[in-house]
Image (cartoon, rainbow, N blue to C red; front, side, top):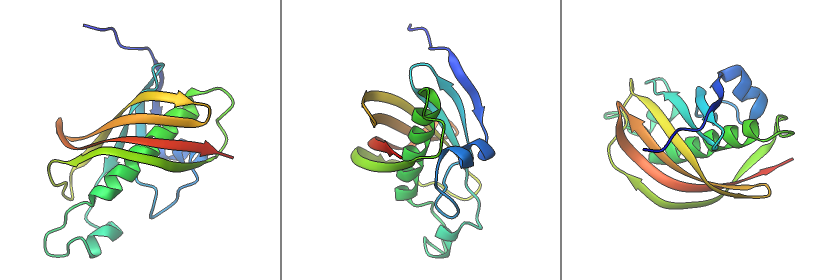
Length: 153
């Protein structure tokens, strides 16, 4: 059994996320990030509510949270982890997608669910980061993907 890395940030709340990422409503898709560790891992939290704009069209009779929004939330969680973890990158920056690989959607996410985005670093080169993410609801994986992102000024 491997020992976990120490926690650098136990909680990044919505106010800190707003200071860290340039995203705003309706495209800010995480509510908080917890347990950012020294190994560049952490967990993004999203509370899915029925009154979100996506449910007006996806789908009004049977609301299902869009998978593409889960993948974007994985990238946002990875962005917060990367920005908060590295000295000198605390100011707001743009976070751009580079890659999405090995993406799978396993179960639908419904209003009332809380999604946990379990992200762990796969590697880093300068301002580019690669992460693996598992989106979980009640401990069950509902989606997974490898995402790459680039931080810019």
